[in-house]
Length: 362
Image (cartoon, rainbow, N blue to C red; front, side, top):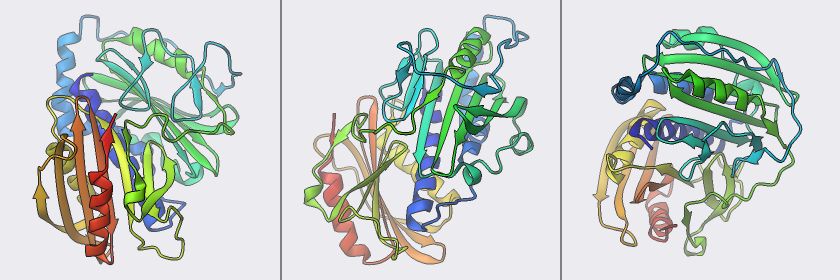
């Protein structure tokens, strides 16, 4: 996979981390942040613009060519033997030609150029998560919007957009759900490859969602660990995020209870454990971390994996906080362990490290 796809997935997942943190740390079920806006932010990111420029070298067809297929106003399907389940989600789809199930993110990919990424956020209320999902908002972020409309997906209210935030890539996105879940389907393809764009639209029109499907949270996990070594136990899985809490239970009464979030990212040889950690810290600052100070940074290997570990001290919403980051990498996989603590910091650091030191990449 080319680096622009990896960057795309990485930034999406960082934004999802923020949404999950908001829900757990602050007990805010109805976050006003519309996480779908990450698409526009990614496509306008300066680094992304440099990477996406590489697609100009692939532009062998007329740039004036346009997509002729349309999204259905009502996507209503029954599951067929041509549908496949995207592992780790409750969504089924008939894949576009030559798209395969991705091994490093939840979705499908076509070679090194096109992708379809899915986030199935159980517990995410569509009325708040997509409240500000609008053509005007995307255009205010600099995107060129070709089409935007409200539709339905298997009876659920949905919003659809076809947009371009860079000269070299176009994107489709659909967000749908109800008061108990929000599912986001994000796609991207080269601007000159309208054939693939049409095939993606055809595929999106085949979406089938099984709200009652039971998800095995570790089916798509690229890691394993024994949480018996720490007071933090597996609590919940949400949109490719593994959440560990004290005793494995939800603590609604303590909004400052420490947690551990484990996420997995694609990686290539232009990225390092350190660069991923630095990106995480930068994003944390964008989402409210003030006056960060890094301490006790080390690159000592864990289980012979490339490793970068650091403790970030700062303020979050006026409270002294610790963000513990440990990134371990092997081949095309990177695992990020993030511990968050606002009290009993030194005690919690030790348990964060116990989890990190126990990680194994599959």
